[in-house]
Amino acid sequence: MLVKVFGSAVFGVEATTITVEVNIDKGIGYHLVGLPDNAIKESSYRIAAALKNNGYSMPGKKITINMAPADLRKEGSAYDLTLTIGILVASQQIEAKDIDKYVIMGELSLDGSLQPIRGALPIAIKAKEEGFKGFFLPKQNVKEAAIVAGLDVYGVENVQEVIDFLEGKGNLEPTTIDTRAEFYKDLDFPEFDFSDVKGQESIKRCMEIAAAGGHNIILIGPPGAGKTMLAKRLPSILPPMTLREALETTKIHSVAGKLKEVGLMNQRPFRSPHHTISNVALVGGGSYPQPGEISMAHNGVLFLDELPEFKRDVLEVMRQPLEDREVTISRAKFTVTYPSSFMLVASMNPSPSGFFNDPDSPQTSSPHEMQRYLSKISGPLLDRIDIHIEVTPVPFEKLSDDQKAESSVDIRKRVTAARELQSARFEHMENIHYNAQMNTKHIREYCALDDVSKQLLKTAMERLNLSARAYDRILKVARTIADLDAAPTVVSSHIAEAIQYRSLDRDGWLG
Image (cartoon, rainbow, N blue to C red; front, top):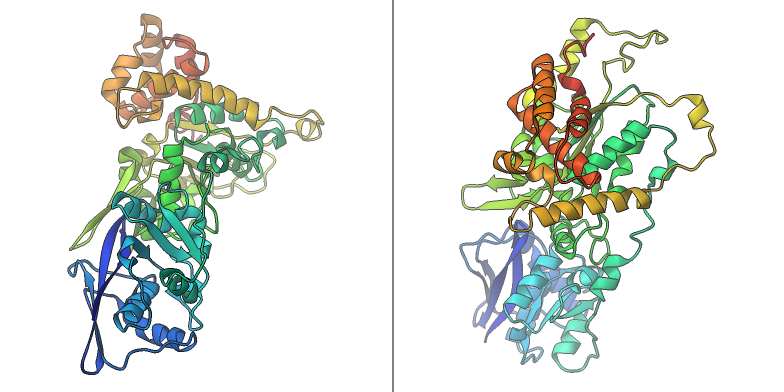
């Protein structure tokens, strides 16, 4: 008997429906075709044990299974449940008339219970698009898949529950989630709040500007100045994600298998990889491509602590994704693209010892050591960072002050207002939503300067020996400062403040 069951494969952040054809005929053997990887080939052992432990048996006949389209490579153990149901129906151990109306995915344990899978959300979206009635998957993944309205999503704990439902014996209820309620909960209670930060008013102002315009920022200062503490609080002042952004972000985390029994992500991601990270782990890839840290930080913040400690080639591979806001991974037979529109926040000590130009510090670094330390960060990468700011240690008077600082929620209101101005400005443009995404053409249009501002910028360019890209960055930051002031045009005070935020371009910074 020939039976067709439906599963799904995930490539990049999109899913493709897989038709699993199971044919049982005279003879003996188990033949699995359609480019399965080793995890799928090993499924026969898991399936045989799970069937036996649940009162069924593996047919002692010739079983041929084709996974179509046959030229597309399939990977992972998530097809165990699909194959199991196909074998049971084809061998007439169970009856399932409506089997073609469901997508079935799940990894089997030997006792028939189900383990979580990756990519449940993209699979559910594809199932809805292709008109399937429902989707069976492990209970641990049900919340992320239930985000998709108009699809019956059944979270199951073991294979017997699926069998009972298909035979009309079970009373499985589809999981429903109120997406909007899920999306808006806990938005005003960030884990890390700017009200915890004592002093550092100028740095908080920088963070506010960076958040308002989506600008990349680098913090330079000695150990203990508060660089990491400030960076961790940046997501709390970013505007709340839109539903579209939340869905995009949740899809990426679903594909990477990082969603732990959560539905829609409503907090912007904050990723902080260790400096020993490899190229592939940062940008994504591998023999079976997976999203890297820059894609996991999509619509959020990527924090690189101690930037010069990262391998130079690792930092260089970020240059193209920083400009294009996506990363494309090419293999011989296919290409996948992962979105990577993130805010880069980097921190570094000003010297290897960490105490550059500090008269009270016994540790000093020679000019040669300084040069070697700073040369790990290339000029082109620094050019892609809009704001450079020096962080100084907080004096004791500020640390011991009991006065409560401004909260993240209050700062976020100003940031959101500035972002709304930008959204209105760029509403007719497809891929531009905030100032950091502007190209040269938009800069000329929206950052027009008067004569005083032009002269001020010209003087700064000549004295600081700035590149053309740095010129554009200053104008973008100035536009954001103007938006925070709700000013229609960029004036000299906005330009003057933006020029301050190019510390690493200053001649003599090395002393």
